Image 1 (spheres, rainbow, N blue to C red):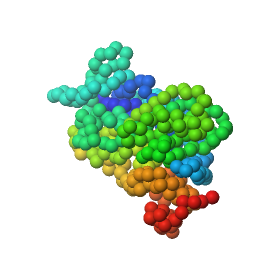
Image 2: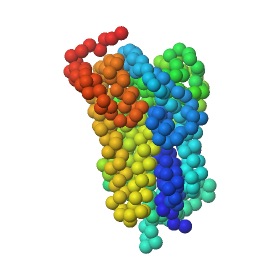
Image 3: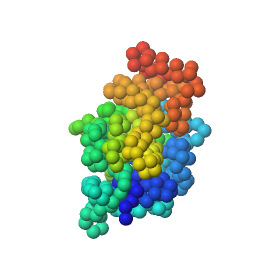
Image 4: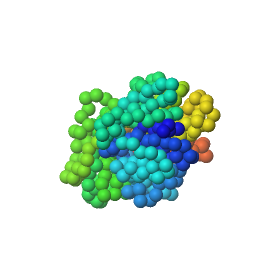
Length: 393
């Protein structure tokens, strides 16, 4: 048969695209590598839970506080008011999304993408089947590349796909010790310390019966495992049993182009849609999958390949400003421990806390309080110019 769309990759982005297209009546195939679990803190905001109908049994922990820790060990606890941040375990969450896509009508294939061929009969996606080891082929009208950072689809099909910058994330899933020492099962810890990560941050995120402890960096020569071991030691988690270890690239900015002008459009990490500064990716991956599905459906309906450009246009229309602000924050504060110290000091401000979490929970900049924005802008300049002390209580 010839599919309307073949989705390459079955993470949150690919699974969302496959489900949306199947539910709208299109014939869809989804190719995914089995057994791969992406390293991820697992935080999902309320908007994701609502927009994508995530059941409560997928939420393994509910977080009510975020703790920011500076290079000198200073701590700022930011309460999450009027709600919570949900935590998911990617081992189970991704499979839930894939299974839901299949229930909606998407055909699942397990294997590894190899290439896309074209002839007079159309577009053909080749992949190596995991069970047989043989190369198989699926004929299709359109392709959605959702195969992650350093996407093979992007490299082969979309201009600039081989150049996207990234950091390497590494984490260890450990058995959670309960409320012991510095670990709190209702709090996410974010560690801004050059000894852990010279250009990003480390994290300790509860996952119910387990926890994710990890860090990221874009610099060569950093030993990710040693840094994570140091993070576990500083958090009192060295003796906890390690369940699994995972590492993977995380893109740093959206690509300038997401389609090849013919029959391929990118989604999720393959398109670079991970938030700067925070590294948050699940919500934006699922939105990326949804807009890719929308663009594909439009192209199938109109026959105009330029409609594939809708994916990037729709995404950037809603999220470009947030990415711009977060990118500026990362460039300003992540370059040295002295800057990180000032960043954590800035987070001590109540206006910063409220507007930051309002933006995180709702996924948009809050424009209703212009005086608060002005105050934050002035305080930000003062910190960057070293006009204020980082000392606080």
